[in-house]
Every structure is written in structure tokens, then in C-alpha cells.
Length: 143
Image 1 (cartoon, helix red, strand yellow):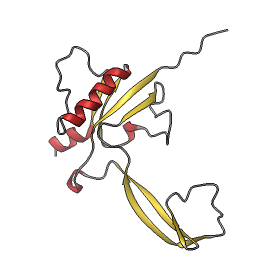
Image 2 (image 1 turned 90 degrees about the vertical axis):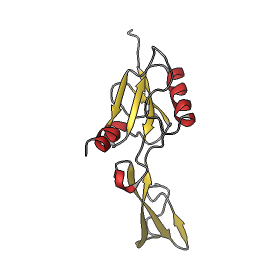
Image 3 (image 1 turned 180 degrees about the vertical axis):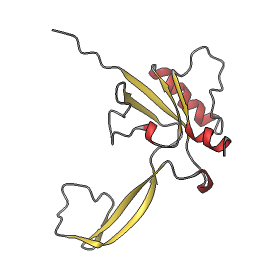
Image 4 (image 1 turned 60 degrees about the vertical axis):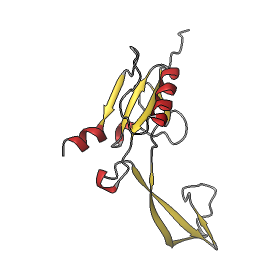
């Protein structure tokens, strides 16, 4: 019987839009519904009774999808996070780096918290990301 080998990568979010002028490429639309006398944040919850939902009373909000220095564990083939909502960083206008070593990813995330506005690896090291995607930095510098 063959051995099942699954490759995981560690994605570190290095930059997200901070100002409206940078666009909303990191924002997703969400809804808050009124059900009876209560407001419910997650209307897609299967446990909600559809009969009680007043579809005329809802608030549409935009929420950030990713946060700077966040670490995601990605499926090596699809590029989606393996837990949570299955987010896929390449679909959004953010900067991120991919690592094949969890320790390096954790060091980079800590670096981003210490050096708040540094979108590049500030430590002197021969080891770095195996892939870097700079959609936001590129679009800001090339308008």
C-alpha cells in the first residue's frame, strides 16, 4: 500500500491595506440579520430557523479577511488554509510569503510585529521564504 504524503506550507501575511486609498482588496462582505428581537452575525448558520429571519432587516458590513503577521497553514496543492474558512491568499490583494518551515514562518510573523512597517525580511539570514507575493506593494508603487 502506498504512503500518503501531504505537503503543507506556512503562509505569513506581510501587508494588508490600511487606508481606503489602498483599496478594499482584503475586505469581504458579511451580513448581520435581525431574527426576532436579536441580531445574528453569521446568517449562514444551518441551525437558524429560516422562518424567523426577517430578510428585510439586515445590515451589510465589510470585514477584513486577513491581518498582518497572521500565519496560515496551506494545503500544498490547492493553496487554501486547511482549517477555518478555507481562505486562499492568492485571491486577495495582500502581500504574503510562503515558507516550508513552520519555525521560519513563526519568526517572520514575530518580526512583522516588532518591525511594524517593514514588508521585507529584516533579519540577516540565508533562509527565507520559498515564495513571495507582493500584490499590494506592487500596486501601490506602480499606480
